[in-house]
Image 1 (tube, rainbow, N blue to C red):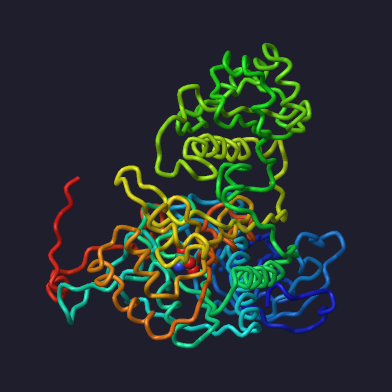
Image 2: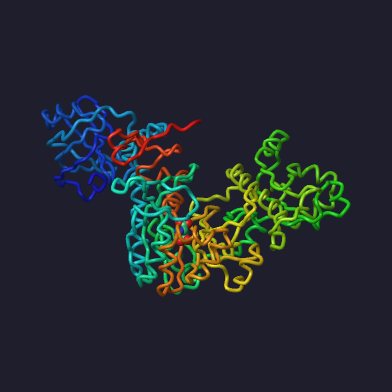
Length: 593
Ligand code: ASP
């Protein structure tokens, strides 16, 4: 093991096998750093000591694979390398075998400057040799193993579910697999094992988990991959708290495996409260919450500023940003995404000069230090008068628009001024459970209610009677686990009664026939003695990404896809032969662009 040699090994005869990481030829002495998964050791080829082996050492080039037999020697004190664990020793070569040569690679694993990402993905096998990637993949292994161990210790079975299946309703497009045996029919790759895990509860396996690949054909963003890995679990007879405890347990184990202790239980917050305080359902608790500052203004102030008196007036505070120049303030404007007529006051100085009373109160109420940035987000005078089907909700749609606009701005400012506020410290993990989501969302385009989660999510018992009469007010027994502004996972208590499942499909505007043709097998299974059950799924890739301090999922997935869903190494997807298509009974139609 190249990374394992220590001073105490001095005098031992050892064999090292690995890659040539770096070679320095000083004439009589050749130094070669040999690398494997465990690290590097410096090997010395000395012409004086062994002319034949020194001569062979001259042939070595970067990334050759070699075996060296030699004697471990303590380095002279002035050549000790404190930066590597093997820095006190070197191996003096007695014998060298070149196991394989290597073409000069497009970039070297030891390069300090990173190659561009396309190159890295095309030559992924070289990229994976880099220290950082070796670390990330090992971390991923340790985290997955800790999760498996923990869940097994709690009586969960890991049970596999099919990849070739029917479409499941997670809301994205399916990847389809054509059937050759039954031409014209298709399997779908699962968006998640949702229905299978529910069926496993019906089958009597009361604690299931699986670290499982899921497939969703979505337009990709930085933090999405067409195939990704979930930590998926389901249990029978749980209260939500049992699911939360289980998740807290395996996350504790996973974070411990990565060297971090986390505090449980995680705080919990209702969806409505998350919106009121943070304007988003995945709040980053490292930044201050909003302060509602409507009461800091007089009614005359509000009128003069054309601020809507019936909607929230929110102060976003970002600590330690300091004074902004005119240009810097102008740069903030494009960050603001206005919903429902929301407006921004990014020039708090102006408020201070014209509305001194209000600004003093705002500073006080929000606890702002002089160097803190304050930005106000308000409703414009004309907004908020619509007649929306969700008007009776605790947070009305007009209010939601203001909160949401402010929520996005808060996140954008937090990112922009990360260096100044210094609140995004590595290792500061703020978890949160967000609960009691609305069951339905109103689709403005289609003028109908759609499921906010997947349609197997149970409504709150107390809200059951409003399913038909007042869908806006029905809350779901759904929960998300959030970490530092990232949604790690979501889950719910499920519907276990067939009659209620039918009512939900109906409330979602699905006819009896539609429901039957899509989920008939599942509706039938529900009729054969289904225990109450619930579960959750968390993104493993995201957990590892956060633990690795990486800024893209691609850094923690061995063979990821690009934003265009391509695998650059194997060059997929590709066209297939006419014969293959014929076999499948498929013709390819060119898409009109
Ligand atoms: N199947 C859901 C998802 O993948 C998670 C769950 O409800 O367990 O989003």
